[in-house]
Length: 567
Figure (cartoon, rainbow, N blue to C red):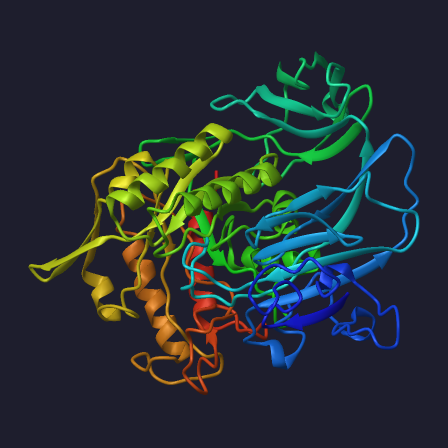
C-alpha cells in the first residue's frame, strides 16, 4: 500500500497540536486544484509498504521507528443489492484511525486483535480510497506499556479484507461441548440485522446431526443437544464440518470437540490426566525478519514445535494471528493464549483496565470455537499489590464468564528462600486462588543463582492446583561454542536444560512446561554487540532456523515423557 512516514503527525495535527479538519489532513487525500495551491503530501508519489507486514523490517531506516505511518489503498467495488459490507482488519499495531473517502470510520486501540467497520452506505462503485493512520508509540497507560522485551513491530501486521454479508447475517456463534461433558453440545448463535427472529439450523453432516432452533427478539438462540462424536486430541485432532444456517445466511466452520477440566493438580483432557509438553513462541517470522502473519509462517513454527515433541505451545505475550489457531486445530497442538498485561502497567487506571478487558474480549470472540485453545492467560510476571490483584481478578472473572469451557492462567513469579543447603521456591501469589492453572516463570542459572543450584531446588505450593512452568532458559548464540560454564555458548544453554530437566522431575504438581523460547526474537533490550545485536538469544532455534544443542535435550525429555505416558 502507498505509505507516508509521519514522525511529527503533521498529517493529523496542526502546529498548535490540534486535530486537522482541512485539506492538510492526510486522510482527505487532497489534490491541488491549482498550480499555486499548497499541498505538502501525496500518496500517489509516496513509497510503498507491504500489507500485511510490519514497517520495521521493510526499510532499514524504519527498524527502530516508533510513531505514525499513513497507508492508502484505492479500489473499485460493485456492491450487491440487499447486502452489507464491512472492512475487516486482522490487526494493526497499536492505535489505528480508519478513513474511507475522506471520512472517519472509527478508531481501534490494541495491536494484536481484529476489528472492523461497516461501510455499506459509504462505498461507491469507483475511486474509493481507504486510509489508515497507524501509530505504535508506547505510552504508560497502554496495554502493553512502555517497557517490554520484544520488538514493537508497527504497521498493518495482518490481512485486510472486505466482507460482504446478507442484510441479516450470522454475527457469531459458539458450538462446543458443555463443560464437564463428552456428549452434550452447548452454545449460542447471534444474528445481526433487521430480521432478528428466525429459525436456525445446526448440521454436522458426518455425524448425521441436524438440529433446529429459534432466535429471540434480540436475534439470539441458545443451543443444546447431545452428540456422539470422536473427541479431538493431540493424538487424533478430529475436526468436523459444522454448518450453521438461518433463513438469510449460512456459514461453515471446522470445529473439534473435546472436554477440558482440572482435578486437584491434574489437567484433564477428555477425562484423562494430561502433561503439557510445550514451548513458548513469539510471533516472529521463522525464516525472515519481522512479524509472522501467514499460514506458511504458522506451519513452520508449529512444525518445529512438533519436531521438538510438543503437544502444547504458549503463544506469548499477546494474541497471535488466527492462522496459528486454525493450524493448531489441524495439527493437534494445544494452545495457551494471552493478553499483553505484562510486567508493570497502570493498575489503578480505569481506562487501562477497560483496554485490557477489550483486548481479552476480542481474543475470546475470535478464537472461542478453536479446539486447540485450552488456556487464556491474563498476565505475565506482574508484581503483587492490591491494585494489581483487583485488576487481574476482573480479567479472570471476565474470561470465566465469557467462555466457561476454557481454563484461565497467568505467568506468576515466586518466592525464594535459601536455607539448609537447599533453594526453596514457593508459589503463594494470592491471585493463584482464582486461577484454574498456575503459571510459573523461573530463570535459575541465568538471571539468578548458578546452574548447579537447580540440583538443590525444591518447589512447593499453597494451592492444590496444577502448575505449568511457563518460562525457563538461557541465551546462546548459535555456533558459539565453549565449555558448559561459559555464558552465551550453546554448551552453557545445553547444560542448563540438562539440569533443568532433572529438577522438573521433582515437582509433584507440575503438569506442563513451556520453556523460553522456540526461536530467537528481536528485542531492543538486548544490546550486547556480537552476541545479542538486538535479539533475545534464548531460542532453541536461531533467527536463521538453525537448531541449537539444547533443542535436542528438550526433545529427548519430551520423547521420554511421551513414551512413558503412552497407553
